[in-house]
Length: 160
Image (cartoon, rainbow, N blue to C red):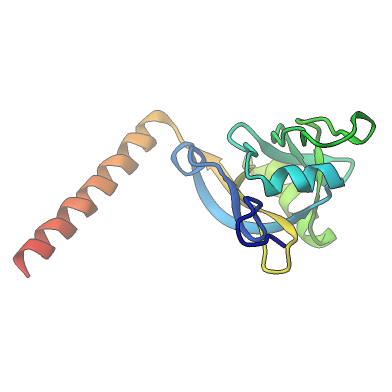
């Protein structure tokens, strides 16, 4: 756990994928654990991870997080250092993993990480979104709806 004055993250968000909700239409969210080595956890606690270009996919019947960047921990001995972009196994129930893999294969959906965080018990978790990719016109429509709702709320607030 982090002490007062220490810059380590003991719980809360470490990394967020802001482009995911813009590029994809999120149908469902899933929480999954991560299998990490010690230097990865220590590096995550410094808060410098990046999941912007990452995705989750199947490998031999299990789910893995690909292309997530967890930088090297600077104080680690080179023998214990980890690869920054190595695939990391996701911890989900077997039935849920089968359901997600079938959704990826059959329905043309993808699993995108929305954010990476430490829960209250200090475990590293990733919030995944089962998503469909948006076309350019869908993105424009979503922007129009968001702006319309914002303008509508502004008018109602100013009147009342």
